[in-house]
Amino acid sequence: MLNTLYAKLIAVLVGLTIVMAVMFLTVIRNSDVARNQEINQKLYRNLASRLISERIFEEDRANPAVVQNVFDRIRLVNPRVDVYLLDSSGHVIASSGLNALQRKVIDLEPIRRFLDEKIELPILGDDPSDASRPRVFSAAPISLAGADDGYLYIVFRSFSSDTLAQRIKQSYVLRETLWLVGTGLLAALFAGALIIMLITRPLRNLTTVVDKFRGSGFAEHPEPLRSPRDDIGKLTETFNGMADRILEQMNELKQTDALRRELVANISHDLRTPIATLQGYLETLHLKGSSLSGDEQRNYLEIALKQTEQLSALVARLFDLAKLDSGQIELNAEPFALGDLIQDVAQDFALAAANKSVTVRCSTRSDLPLVLADIALIERVLRNLIDNGLRHTPKGGSVAVTAYGGAEGALLEVADTGSGIPAEELPRIFDRFHRVEKNRGLEDGNAGLGLAITKGILDLHGSAITVTSVPGRTVFRFTLRYADPPVVHVPAESDKAAAPPRTVPTFSYPMPRLEADG
Image (tube, rainbow, N blue to C red; front, side, top):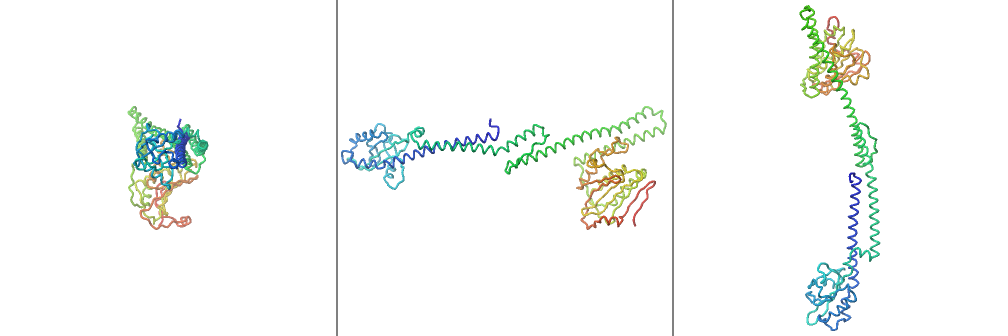
C-alpha cells in the first residue's frame, strides 16, 4: 500500500497530525487542570482563615475531640472539600473522614509557602486521603487545646479527578478550544497533503517516464520533462542526460553488433578465399602431380605460395589489430630523422610503383627537427598509407609523401591522385575490414585492416589522422611531436609554393631514378 513516496509522505503527515492532536489534548487537559487549580486556590485561599475568624469552633482552642462534627458539616455543604486538623509537626489529628486516611503525616513546606502572600499560585500539597496525587489547598494557623499551635488544612478536590471527556462536557470554552484546534489540524493536514502532492508531482511524472522507458527496453526516447529549479529538477536533468546516453550507447551497440557481424563475415570470406585457393592447387598437385609438367607444377606452387603469403599477412594484421585493441603494444619512443625513414620506406615500394607505372615522390625540409616516436610503428604507418595510395592510384598517377614543420610537431601528408573516396565513405574508412571498393577477395592483398591499424598506432602516439578527398586527390595527414621543442619556421601557403622543399628519391616506371634538389 505504501509503495510510493507520496503515500509514505501522507502517512507520515497523518501520523504527525495524530501525534500533534494527542499533544494538544494533553496540553489542554494539563492546562485546564492547572487553571482550575489556580482558580480554586485563589477563590478559597482565605477559607481556612475565615473559618477560624468566624469562630465556628465552640472553644477558642480547637479541640480535636469535638471538631469532628464541624468538619462533617463543612463536608456536607461542599463534598469536594476535605478538612483536616494538623499539629505543629504535620500529623493529622482530626479529619472529616478519618477512616479514609492514606497519609497521616503532611509535608508542612507547601503550607509555609502558601502562607507567604507573595508566592505565585497554585501550590500543591499532600492529600491525606490520596497518597498518589497532590492537590490545591487552603491553610491557616490555629491554636490547639493542650498543645502547640497547629494548622487548619482544607484540601480542594475540584475537578482534578475528572476525565478529559467529563471536562470537555462540562466546559463550553474547552469545547470551543478543542473544536478550533481540531479544525486547524484538519486544515493543516489537508494543506500539507496538497503541498506534498504539488511537490512530488514532478517526481511522479519522472517515475512514469522511467517506467515507460524501461518498458520500451530502453529503446524509445522518453518524453521531455520540465525541470523545476530544485533537487527534483536536477534529478530530472540527470535522467534526461542518462536517457540520451543510454540511447546513444544502445545505438552504438547496434552499430557495433552490425560491425561485428560484418567483421565475422569479412574474416570468414577473406580467410576462406586463400585457403580454398591454396587447397585447390595443393590437391591438384597431389592428385595430378605426375601428369603435370614441371612448369605447371612450379606455377601451381607459386600460386599456392602467394596465397600462403597473403593468408600470413592477413593473420599478422589481425594479430596486430588485436594487440592494439587490448593495449598490449607498448611504445618504444626514440628520436629519429623523419626524412630518412620516409626515404627508406619509399625505396621499398620502388618496384611495386614501377610495375604500376606510378611515381612516388618524397619531400622533406632539410631543417626538420628530430621527432620522438616508435620508429617501427611509424614505419608501419607509412607503409600502410603508401600501399593504400598505390592500390588506388591508376597508371601514370603519383603518390606524394611530404613532411614539414608545424607549431606542434612535424606534419606528414600522404597524397595520391586516385579516383578519390566518396563523401559517405569517409567516416568509415578507418573501420576494420571496411573497403571502399566493393569487390571481395584478396587478389590485391587488401583485407581492409591497414587504415584501422594505422589509426590505432597513431592513437597510441596521441596523434589524430585526418583525410580529405576529392576526385583525383586524396590526402591523409597526421602530426608527430618533436623530440625537443625547437624554434620552427611554419611556412605560409605562399612560402610553400615559392620555396621548393628538399626532394628525396622519386621513383617512376620503367626504372627508379633519384631526383634531389641541390
